[in-house]
Length: 196
Image 1: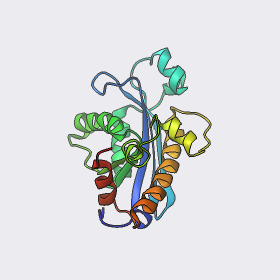
Image 2: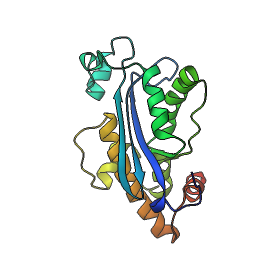
Image 3: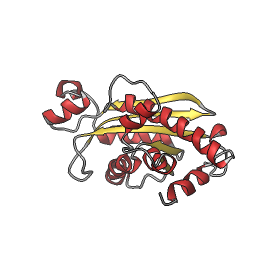
Image 4: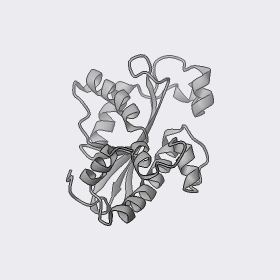
């Protein structure tokens, strides 16, 4: 990974997960979707439903559309996390509220791979707060609507990942116009650290 290379020339991952709740200690991953972007082109995808080993609550099905029958016969997180690690390598990861995703992934990494996920990350939620401070909400759906990004549904990992990517591209355009330069990972991290 090269931290001072413009994003237009770099390789990075965009990802999203779906879970059975909000607490990475008490809840589990039930879906992972990610794709690899190379020089602004999506070149590879990773997708897996994940069987948590128990029936998921109805409220999770209502939010995600993921049902218990969909998870029967799917691999468990132990099997999925190694494949996922092979896919993402040490690329920069882009996600919306990425610390949520990373908290679940790091728990799985710690338990099954005996290591931490060390990929650097950029959070589009935090970036939007810095670049669009006038918005009353920075939820994925609100920002997508603000940018007129069309989507079929929310809270499925694949759909949310593509929405996040479109939001990231729009935010990058705004940042380039505002800062008058090509942006690198280090530039984005410095923008995110600024006070709103």
